[in-house]
Amino acid sequence: MSKTQQLVLPTVTADPGTRRRRSGTRSGAWAVYVLLITLRVINIFPFLISVSTSFKTESDAAVNPLSLTPASWTSTAYTTLLSIPIFRSGSEAQPS
Image (tube, rainbow, N blue to C red; front, side, top):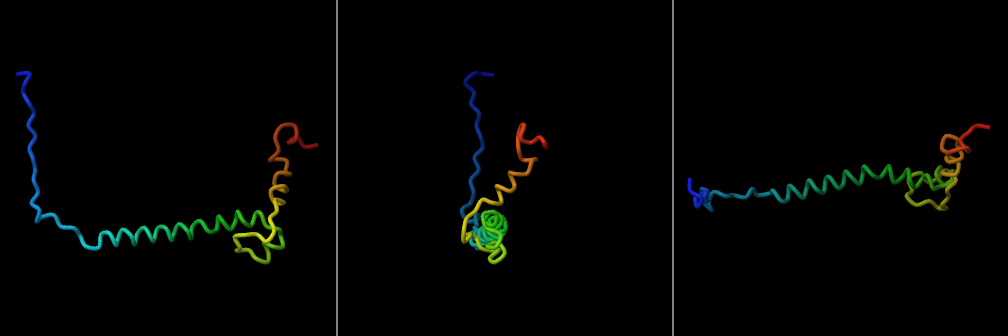
């Protein structure tokens, strides 16, 4: 074998007439994207409702449970949650 040998790769040429684009491929892809985005918005809505309800007062949550914006913002639910001994750390977690 000689050091100057070169590897010759075969070339493949496609006949331009054989390449056909399927009609509707792009519109089908757009329809799938629109469907996925719609389903994602529907999927995330309950999570957003839960987060916004955690900042509502009890009466506001009872009157308008599906509202994304509370009439009055409050962190009472988080204060109550963090007052439970299991969520405290160190010596504060010890029952008295």
